[in-house]
Length: 169
Image 1 (tube, rainbow, N blue to C red):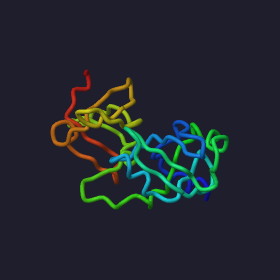
Image 2 (image 1 turned 90 degrees about the horizontal axis):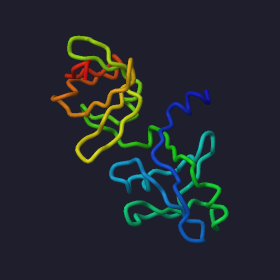
Image 3 (image 1 turned 90 degrees about the vertical axis):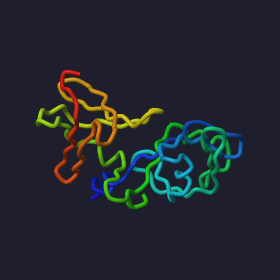
Image 4 (image 1 turned 120 degrees about the horizontal axis):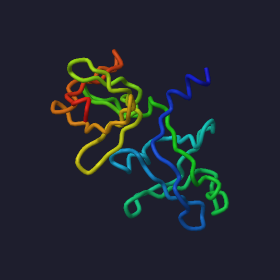
């Protein structure tokens, strides 16, 4: 049962550093927009940790800062640095038709229009131009997630993404 619960948890950020002396931490957010991370309650820090409430948080520069309940000083905050921030999948907003969270794409098989397998999505990352699928198969490929030009079909039920891509590239 615990494995099922863990598999429904998503990493949405991490504690990246200390901020001040009163228990605040710097937070790296993987949400879009970044400040959305502050709307999810509670946070689960690290692997197997219980829920932690967010006492306060705000945008700061290009990132976020936050203070978790029960974290009152710099020493307590230092123990959190490096921990991933997880939330339950059901804490995320519902998506419209033909929209996907990155976590939904990881693990899907990727094939060309003629059925040539390229591998599986290992991870997804953002660039200034578009999101990129990291596909691992016989080698690693970086495919731009550009709907209708490169990515022609995403079918989570079949566990497949179809792409208009030259397998030699």
